[in-house]
Image 1 (cartoon, rainbow, N blue to C red):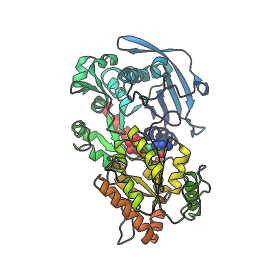
Image 2: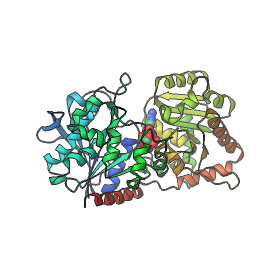
Image 3: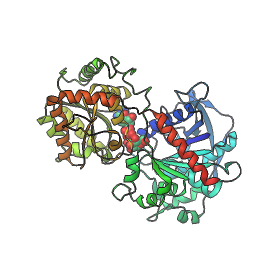
Image 4: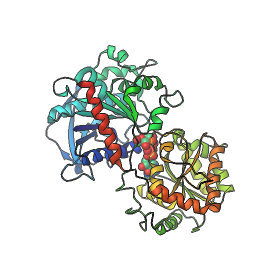
Amino acid sequence: MKILMVTSEAVPFAKTGGLGDAVSALALALARLGHEVRVVLPRYYSVDRGKLTPLEGEMGVPVGGGEEWCAVYQTEIPGSRKDNPVFAYFIDHERFFGRDGIYGTPGEPDFLDNPRRFTFFNRAVFQLCRKFKWFPDVLHAHDWAAALVPVLLKYEQRQGPFEKTVSILTIHNMGYQGIYAKDNFHYTGLGWNVYYEGGFEDWNMMNFLKAGIWAADRLNTVSERYAEETKTQAHGFRLDGPLRYRSADYRGILNGVDTEVWNPAMDRYIPVAYTAKDLSGKAKAKEALQTAFGLPNEPDTPIVGMVTRLTGQKGVGEIFGPDYGCGWGICREMQLQFVLLGTGELWCENEIRNMTANQPNFKGRIGYSEETAHLIEAGSDFFLMPSQYEPCGLNQMYSLLYGTLPIVRNTGGLADTVENYDQKRGTGTGFMFNDLTPGAIYNTVGWAVWAYYNKREDIEKMRIRGMKHDFSWKQSAKKYVEMYNDAKKAVE
Ligand code: ADP
Ligand code: GLC
């Protein structure tokens, strides 16, 4: 099959979170199954044009009555097989993408012209296929920034060479829908009838994701539990209705892990590699982590680690919220060390700096670092991820593979990947709680630390159990192929 992934993020070129990891890894896994896969994304300012190959000729893209001209660049996605490489195409348009930030910057978190930028990008996808005469069987759109693709296909493009093309929309996070003033609708070039019947209309605003949900031939999100949750009012972010309406075409497919990058047996960022058979390298990683964060080298003190975007979704309010968060209590009252790496909301970054300066067993680092993320995954004993909601979550899977026990809330992909500790039987792979409250987080970290000191054998068994998980992309990629085949029924 010919598959074109349409996305605003793909590693190693552009990433704000797990979306970038998921798209590239899925593309590579599908290519390994023999499919012809390409990825298209904007050429952001941070992507060095010098490392890309320019493709011949400018390309005109109709946007809102006029035409925008852009260039197209190409490169292979690293990790591609020689015999079936995955190419990434970059749409290069100076005014829309020649600036810092993907969706925004700290000073302007959501660029004012995002509806126009991403409308242009989505329209460019069809022009790209025409220009290079490469017509996919499947147009696979990811998240709101690509959600116009299924809509354009359904209402305008499904003819001629696109007659048999089907569309897939993968929702990585319901919290980001692309909701803008409806004056932006004219950029799409679609008629106002489509604004209403195509599901754009959302309390007199324009909602990209909602229209994509309406139009895509098949839909999915990134875990089975989250697929169920999003059909409820509690987790649907107001789109539970449309998702219930489409439930026959909507499913959950768990993300995999790129085990060439996240694998303790061959991790270049940790001092000594290790496997489930011999965990001595993990002790070395713990020592290195303590040294890197300026903590005393105490092999028998448990380390709780976090690597996260500092935003409400990740439960950071319940830990670091001034006055009510449980972070200070955990560090003052428990015999542990706590390390964190993250960036995000300013109030939270400041509170983390404050705790780092005043609480000796807490060390937070504000910044983005692959290397430190790997060291935390390997060197910690526990990984804390108390998400308010979690479509899939990658870090808890990394943790499991690194013998680091996740402490998670019972939700979404966390619920689908972590098995709660059963104290009577000594089984499980992590520690879970239900309610997102500072008290529940405090108690569950307390439970894990208690088990570390009092049920050490169980802890060691749980580590091994987690490390034996198979989170490779192959299984998930096969499920995507099933969905593609199912979608084809829509055009037959
Ligand atoms: P989300 O996409 O909601 O942020 P995921 O768990 O799916 O959550 O993916 C987060 C990804 O981003 C992981 O690969 C994680 O290691 C990485 N990450 C997040 N913050 C940082 C950071 N400050 N430094 C390095 N990696 C980070
Ligand atoms: C989103 C979700 C996260 C998921 C990632 C990749 O960023 O928040 O849970 O793992 O997308 O699908």
